[in-house]
Length: 287
Image 1 (cartoon, rainbow, N blue to C red):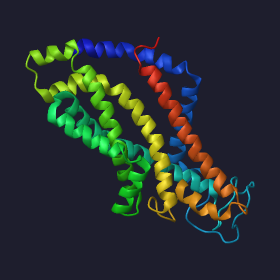
Image 2 (image 1 turned 60 degrees about the vertical axis):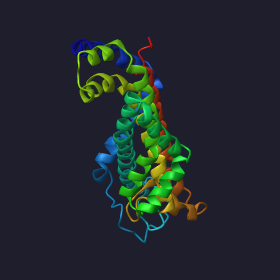
Image 3 (image 1 turned 180 degrees about the vertical axis):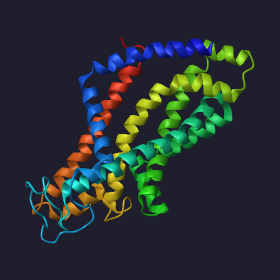
Image 4 (image 1 turned 90 degrees about the horizontal axis):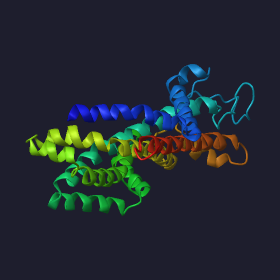
């Protein structure tokens, strides 16, 4: 039975890839995400400037051949700091989504499969967290834990956790009555194996889509926390902290805010396009 399920999933992969490639917006989003990943990895070798060292002879210089995106209030190259800031944003997005997955999916699995008082307790816990706007919750947790990138990522992940609890619970409720699950239960397979081998693999597609969207949300949240001073701490480059500095020079040096803000908009748009494409590609009802 398990072999037949795996074979059917393998047969769907090429169709899903074809459906994804037929959506130009999704492909563009994937290419932009890939470009940001490559830039983040090779940032130290892409520009000759140091993202930390001030240059007091180049303070707030406009874009030029020497500094393609201009310089900031301390004479540091804006392009260099944006490239290094991509590392922070992508790391924050991936880590926060991972925290939300690792905490929310197990709770949703248990609540959806066992039901009863456990389902009620987990659901009310998720509802309580969802009653608080996620960004407000992340700000409160980050302020409580202390200003740092690590604490900001943990706070953002916890704030995104209830979405994965609700999504996982709903998917498990739909899957647990399927014939293959009933058959596995009838032959006496232990519950942990049943959850891991039969239920979880069949609810992965919507979780992947939600994780992609959560990364985009987490990037915005990290930039917001850094803008408020409770995320990545200066002088380490972060798009949010760059915007925090740039707000004081909106008229004298508009490029200091335009380019970091544009980077945030572009990467968030790309992840959302990628998420939409994955949703369509992984949906078996699509032709």
